[in-house]
Length: 351
Ligand code: IPM
Ligand code: MN
View (cartoon, rainbow, N blue to C red):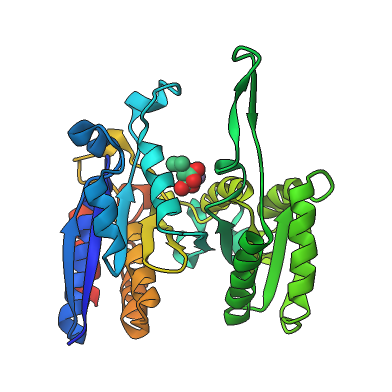
């Protein structure tokens, strides 16, 4: 009987509640398909700072390194957001985790649900057929480049550096994902201004020669922001750098109508991390109001990554079924409004 060790990093705010529902659903999958999932919890983020002073304690990191996958809730607390100069911040835990585990690719799928078309800020006809995947580089670029101050603190700099190796591995992943979907890849960059973007284009053109079955196009990031609003259905797979991917994936995440629906995976060479893209929503914590679907679909992405594909699609089927019945948390403006736990119960029962 296959056995998987899963590190569970609930994090802050609503993190623990939504992850509890993901585990509820995973337990049903385990039963049905004859697997054992062993969960071990560890602190990360503001919770970890309170307990240990460190947003990513050594214990948490070493647990992650020896696990088969990580389920991650959310991090962040307003007490830090209001003080951007705080020396220790919850986000540092997440950034270090990505770097230490070599999670160089962040995959964020965005699809429209017909039942929820009214929730989108765009007119329903613009949302027809939206089904895209953003592949964001996650461990390089301006997030991790040289940064600092000079001139007695009066000049500040952040540098965007990319190596051939870093670009090649993420663009290759973009081609692979595109091939498995509708065969279209868009490189988003700022090659009219930035030298690092020109290197991305050069390497992508080279790789295109070994991937002629994938239709490739290039788009400047400012235009891409516009196109995501005007005609999001044109995109299949977008591949882009760390910062551009951060911004564009947040922009596209609201298209579907609720942040509470969208999962993500962060993968690289070893263990993968799976997390809802929403934040920690501290005001909603402990109130049984948060939408657990993003966490549950993140668990499905985890199963896909562990090559349990049938299990993953069973979860997606159960989510679609319950959404189709008009059941949901308040963010979905459903006909039958339920709390976090009941939403999880219904999805588990639909399996
Ligand atoms: C995300 C978040 C993080 C990022 C923050 C919390 C550091 O916005 O996962 O997109 O910017 O990468
Ligand atoms: Mn972000």
